[in-house]
Structures are given as C-alpha cells and as structure tokens.
Length: 247
Image 1: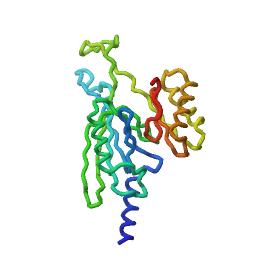
Image 2: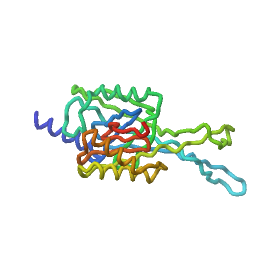
Image 3: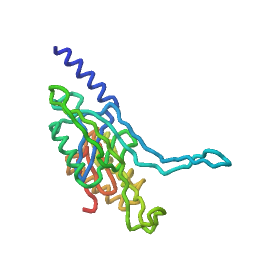
Image 4: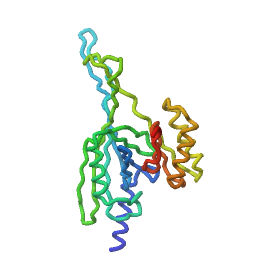
C-alpha cells in the first residue's frame, strides 16, 4: 500500500509541477496575495483581436484589422490538505485559500496575476472560480479564469468616436520580478529598481533603491530563491507586501 501511495504522489507531482519549480503562480489584490501552493501543470491564455471581413463588389472579401481584446488566463490545480513534498508552501487550509480568493473577487478592485518565468503579469478580474472535493484526502480541486483589466482615465482630452465621451485606456502599472541568487539585499534591491525604472517614468531611482533595501532587511533579509516583485508603487517579497512607496 505504501509503495502505491508513493507512486501516486510521484505521478501527481509530475503532472502538477510540469511547468517546473522555477514557475510560481501568484494572485495579488489590495496589498494581499495568494501564492498557489501547487504549480498547475499548464495554463491557457486566449485573446481575440476583433478582426472582421467585408465584401466589396469590385474586389471581393477583404480583412479589416480590429483592436486587441482583453486577455483571459485559465488554469487549474488543487489546494492541498496535506503537506506534500511538491507543495510550494503549506500556509493555509484548502478552504482558507478558497475564502481568500472569494474575498479578492468581491473586493471591488482589480487584482494582478503574475506567473514567474513567463510574460504573464497583468491586472485582472476574477471572472470564474469553481472548486470541489474528489476523494477522501480533503484536498480541494479548483479551476479559475481571470480576465485582463484595463485602467480607464475619465479626465482625458481624447474623445471616443463612438460615445463622444472623454476617456482613454490608462497604461497598466508595470510589474517586474527579480529572483535572488545571493543573500546580498542591496544587490537584489538595485536589480529590482533598475528593472522597473526601464519601463516606467518613475524618478528617485537611488532613493527607491535605499527604501527597497531597508524594506528587505526589515522583512528578515533575503535568501537565494526569494522572489522580489516591484512596481512603481510597491514591493513584495514572495507575495507579501513589504514596502509601499509614497506611504
């Protein structure tokens, strides 16, 4: 019996961690975060580009280029009720994760999904979240669908051709992640600040570097493998908020 259980766990490990140990899925919302404890075996991103076709008598059918639609991200895995070897963390009960995600969905503000090692890091809404139990282990299996969120600035001078209203899509806040390969907090802080500096118009690079360094030290330092996520407004270490700029 023991050998069967061990074989089953190895099979589950190979399926759910197919993306590799380098990859982690984190959902942020309002300064809180959920690091999914079991890496999904895969994820799916879909996006429509809203192209259309028209028929012109003298030419025939031609293609009209549209504007990109919102991206959707789907994945599924489970929240473990046991401390499996392949779990990234075991900080909450399965229904603790369920409750936290439900709270994020009801929070009335956009979330952010970040998948390390990929290009996926975007503001989003939780469009669908379902969960169930399939066996007697107490593990809770789930599937989740996230929809890209676009910030809209209503006080723009640009006029929408269709509605006649002043509005435009605001550029989403950029997010960059840095994985620490040493215990040098200043080196990691410098790399993180330099990354976000390249894609935003933030100023005070040196000051942000020092503030990030202090936040890392205050949070207990940094070890190899820790992931530092930084935006123009905040810094997180392994999914936990450690610094909010300007506050």
